[in-house]
Image (cartoon, rainbow, N blue to C red; front, side, top):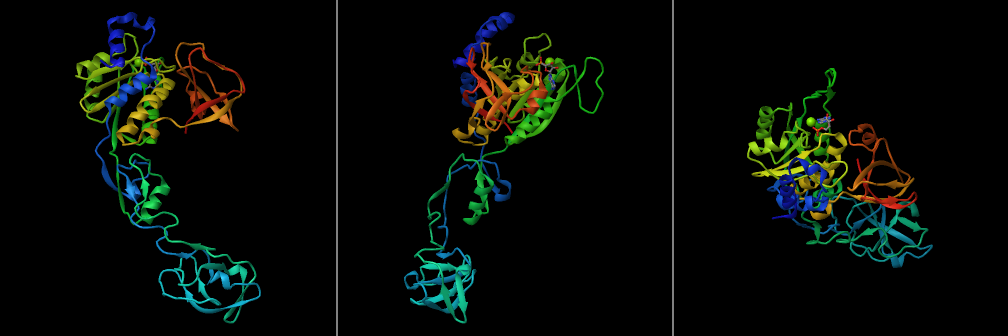
Length: 416
Ligand code: AMP
Ligand code: MG
């Protein structure tokens, strides 16, 4: 039995008192389990215009050398470098525009008027830019030194035929698309699309646009989760809002399970109104792990039903945010065919503006702002405190019991 599952079973056996007991599922155990459960979706071919931010489904090799032929990097004159001594003129014997190869050739002492991207005439080994040339009739005088190879773009100097230009699992950037186009490709095989369903739970929630009555709040997590899913490449195909009531929750879960990913938010804690776990079991889904040692985000749940990966995120907005980044994001990327190096959140180094400590027994993801290389925690560091989160551009993971002194250099997770 995997460690994470064993830990979950233990916490179930302990019953309602489990909240008092030390948590045994670490972030790493949870991620290992999740990665063991989600697989890349079948790949598909997409026109280049639709492939940005997808992941290459296979290695791609250059069909042609780039540049494809020796050509001029400048508007100027193609010459034989060794014959260009100071004060000596060169005779212009022809013109070579871009777009057609006139198959011209020159001898020492001769020059060809040439333009950027035009094929080099045979015998020429350098281009003198027109700014460095004085032309008198059909003669040119060159003021500067000319070196062989100057302003010539050699065939294959950028890349050679057969060279690997994109690896399976690499993210396709705008500039990757440009390279594929330059290679003559019109489409590319990419990882499959991830379709997600979001289910929110809570009697207290009303939709933005309405006016909350006493005790009600605007529902904000579906807005957060849609944006996060789209940011990381998954489409949110359906959003359902459920009161804390089993029948409507079960109906929403059944629909949600038809997707690649089901994200349920709220109702995964230990309260009497936290109905997600029993509802999942009523609809035939299995819960693999519940409660992870992170702050915020402890009540996180992961399970499966058929091909659907199920994530139960705590309802507090910061908890939902942090657990999405830690667990849902890498799972989505893996389904999209991303390679290992894409799965970890990008980090960079920053200096702490002041001391940051974590007296708790769980790793704390502190929300902060990085400006000019300095990290400063922002707003209240509690799981409901959405304002601070909205101002944050970085997360700092502080291990349990750790005290980072002011000025320390730490690794920061970059946020959008
Ligand atoms: P829960 O995880 O259901 O116990 O909810 C924890 C806290 O998050 C409560 O204060 C809820 O009102 C709040 N909450 C739960 N779901 C949402 C949501 N979709 N939007 C905004 N706040 C929520
Ligand atoms: Mg709730």
